[in-house]
Amino acid sequence: MTPPKGAKAPIPIGPLTGKRTPLRRLFARTCAAVNRTLDLLPGSRWLHGRVQRTLEMPDLELRLAADAAHGLDGLRLAFVSDVHAGSFMNGRDLAAIFERIAAARPDLVLFGGDLINTRERELLLFRDALARLEPRHGMFAVPGNHDHFFGRDIGLWTSFLRSHGVEVLLNRGRRIVHGEATLWLAGVDDLTEGEPDIAGALAGRRDGEPAILLSHHPDFFFEAAAAGVELTLSGHTHGGQIRVAGRAPIHHSRFGYEQGWFEVDGCRLYVGRGVGVTVLPLRIGAPPEIPFVTLRAGVECSADAAMLDRRADPAPSRSPTA
Ligand SMILES: [Fe+2]
Image (tube, rainbow, N blue to C red; front, side, top):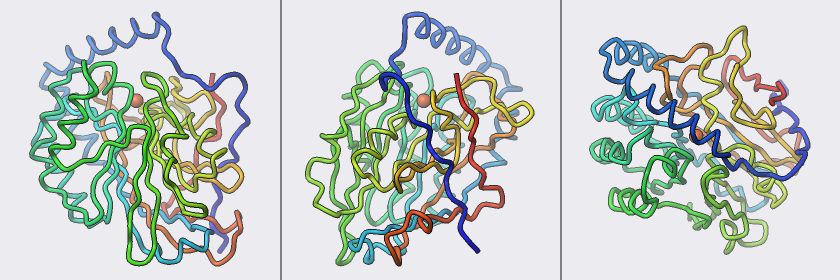
């Protein structure tokens, strides 16, 4: 059977920037106030508990074409994004989710940003949860817009994670050595609240070395694809979080990168729906997700046989966004 391909990525029009306007910042603060109010209601936690029972952990495969990828065959990573800890979720809930990740025994755990929701102290909820994870090649993270906007100091965010075993890849990368093979694992800052720098993230990557990039915002994919990054992992969209008749009323990607696989010139983007929620303790038609990606050595350098999504319904969103 021919593996399903990712949706063809549309060509971006205009400058690639998601910077927030003052109006959007006011909207974000208003949403945060609503979220905090709802968080006080016992019914909200009950609703969110029902959402979390639908958490999916799909097994995906990415076939790498580079000759250098042969030794990476079987390397397995977990991608954890948009936890939004504190939003209808306490430390015990988080620990239970991380126990499930640990039980699946990934080689790497990658955090795709938005660990916190609306308060810097929500990061403390990760203390016990992170202690449950010990992947053999380590844990890595990039910040999301909530980590910047609601955290007062991204330096504190970084040092907290570092002291709990998570290396933050803020516009930089590092080499993962897996037997005889290597992988360049990189991360960029958030597109809307930070200053992503692909050159910094890839500085040090060897010629022909397979690369994986963490970028909270999926719209940065064009930069990654232009630089020949084999796989970009993003979140931010929550898969729409609430979908009506299969469509999300609120869009978080200018290019329709809502969920699932996308490709451009043989480079891949996977947009995960994330773990948590924002504003409302609800998800409709977009269940929470922690994807696991297993790398496979490609037989030929062919974009056609580049990946396989094993989920029952792998169709990614193709709808254009505002
Ligand atoms: Fe986000």
